[in-house]
Amino acid sequence: MHNYHTEDEPILLREYGRSLQDLVKHIKTIEDRDKRTQQAHAWVTLVKQLIPQPTAKDVQEADVKIWDDLYMLAGYDLDIDSPYPMPDPAKVGRKPQPVPYNDSKVMFRHYGKGVEQLISQVNEAETPEEYLVALVSVARLMKNFYTTWNKDQVEADTILGHIEQIGKQPIRPGIAAFIKQEQLLEITIKDPSVKYSQPAQPTGKTTNKTFKRQYRNYKNKNK
Image (cartoon, rainbow, N blue to C red; front, side, top):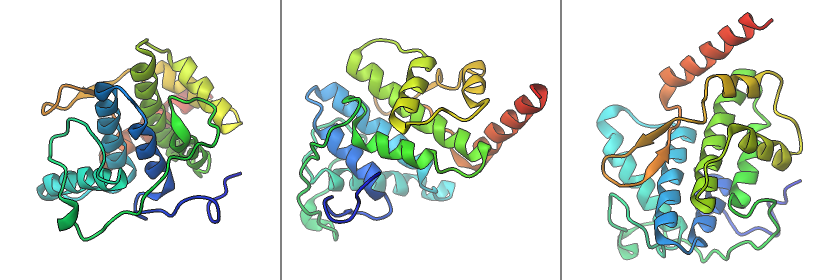
């Protein structure tokens, strides 16, 4: 059970919530600059999946805002390679409060507290299709964290097993088999503006609908 009110630091930007804020704190603790940069790009990719994005003509402006918000959540103290320069805090209307790193025990250090909270949110999804889309997004992020931290390839079974351990409940029936059959954790994309691989995320209504349709077809075939 999470304690959100009295002991935790305040949420700096409510549109991101505590989970994404905690992920930024976790990224700041990564000593290797290349690893830290890779996880920052993964964070931006995850934000684009979890938060509704604007129309195509406003994409670049929204992209800049996400990177600016990343720097803000990091207290303007984040040494990474990014497609946009760090904004000048003096020119930004919103100033963050100092955020100490939460040293509370986490099950897997390379995932951080934020991932644990994201998994808790995944488990609250109402429909199997919504659960699938959310689970794949978080699992891909976890795979990226795992391979960056350990420099080893990791099987889907391992990531899904970690999700079950962290969430303290099994993955819903049929979901794990579908993820492995369709190899949904094996896909990566490349941002041409940087040298770092990012976890591919289902983006936009069209892709999410495709995910859901594929899963419904899978369930019908395996009844």
